[in-house]
Length: 109
Ligand SMILES: Cc1ccc(Nc2c(-c3ccc(O)cc3)nc3c(C)cccn23)cc1
Image (cartoon, rainbow, N blue to C red; front, side):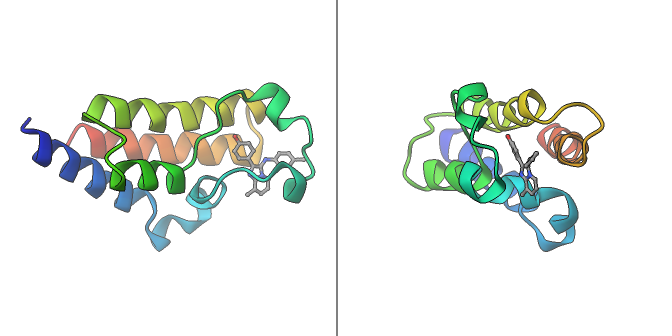
């Protein structure tokens, strides 16, 4: 896709994931994980490259992404981090799976 159109599509998908209608599942992903606030001091030992939707938004707006593949890589990194730290069937792990399913269906649009 043409560069500008490509990034416009990224912005649309990103905005969808952040919508209030998904607040039950996007909450852990809207802002950077705060290990102190969450009482998980081991977080940065387990997750070497933190990523979240606000950081991805800043990256998109600052021209950090040169194509949609780089944008997609950070989205996927965010979910991988979630599954690495939050064991299967925990609330946050399930929220990650649900939000990832929404991303996947939007991304194929
Ligand atoms: C004791 C404990 C256990 C699990 C969590 N996970 C967690 C995460 C999280 C998100 C992404 C991620 O890569 C890692 C963690 N976000 C939260 C929130 C917003 C509320 C409650 C728990 N949360 C917090 C504390």
